[in-house]
Amino acid sequence: MIQLLKIEIDLKLGGKNIYNPLNQIKINILFNKMNIQTTLEKQRKATEKQMKEDAKNVEKQRKATEKQMKEDAKNVEKQRKATEKQMKEDAKNVEKQRKATEKQMKEDAKNVENQRKIDENNIKQILMKRISTRASVEYNGMELVLPILILNKDIDNYDKLSEIINDISVHPNNYPNIIFNDFNVDFKNYEKDIRNKKQIVNDYITYFRNISSHERLQNIKCIYICGKKNKHQKIDELNKGLDKKDTKADIYIEYIDGIIAGISVKQSVDATKSNYSVQKMLGNNELDKTLTEVKKKYLNENGFVSFKKSERDKINRLFYPQNKENAYWIRIREEIKNNNQKIVEKLIELLYSLNVKYEMYEFDGHQLKKLNENVDVSSAKFEEYPPYYLTKCGKERETAKLFYRLSVGEHKYRVEIRWKGNIYDASPQFQIHMDD
Image (cartoon, rainbow, N blue to C red; front, side, top):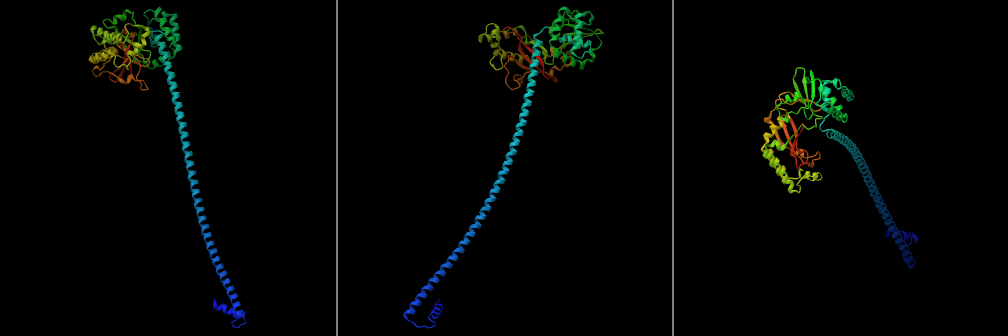
């Protein structure tokens, strides 16, 4: 730098290197100028360097920002795809839930409709049972329907049956092979019961046609209709020596060869098979008397000293299964346990008409079954059966009954120990129902 300055001074002074004050001033000015230029140059370079550094930093920041923006964009896209996937998954789940709800609603609607049909059928059956039990207790119209069907196998509907009934009412002498206890009394009562049960009778006809060719429904001379109380001398002679409980046939068929067979006529498969007094079947008169005393004592202790119709419901509740301290039911259970084999033998003897020497059948509105065949009494069982105490919903029934089950071979019977008449004066009965 000094060498350059010397050359520049020499040039300014004309190549004359002469020192004097003026030259000194000029030299100082030149030095100052040079210092300024040097400083400016340094400053320029420093500024240029700083600008390059700043530009580098700016570029670096730009790249970092661009990279961050790309990363953010990538994350946004990733989040968008995740959100879109979640939305599709949620939509799929919503659709799945909608279909499941729709399916459940259809299933519920189907169940409601099925229950409605069941309830409708139950109501129908209840009404039919009310008609059948209340309209005419003594006269079961099927006791006339069955003989007419046996003797007129071409009948296939209620209207054809009705034509025969109408003709019998006008020309009874044209039907000498149907013999009533007392035509003038019996026929009108049977007819009244039949007219009240058109649907039941139609079903009866339909099922009878399935068994109409049965060998014991052929070659018939006549049919005796006895109902609850027989008045035919020939039937009395046939049943001579038998207990009344053994003679359970409602109609008797006399064949051309002179043989006679009995048929117990049931309105339906749900009809009661038999009713027998519990106290009388359990034992002698002494036990019967004792059980009556236990019952009346129990009633007296609970404030009931005589029968009053207005108190029937209150008395019934004392005999509900929920009342575990009922002294009478406790004693009945004990006596059934102590006399179990005796009860089993007696129930089967009566149920299957084992004391009857002639052929004995039962028509339950569906099937014709022979009763007095060989029955294995030794393997039969009679025991209290807890499931019978529960409704279909699993709730304990509120009814004045005990429930037992009688098992005879492959057949099962529900035996209800229930009251017929007022509890205060009556004995409970074994009421038997098929439960296969």
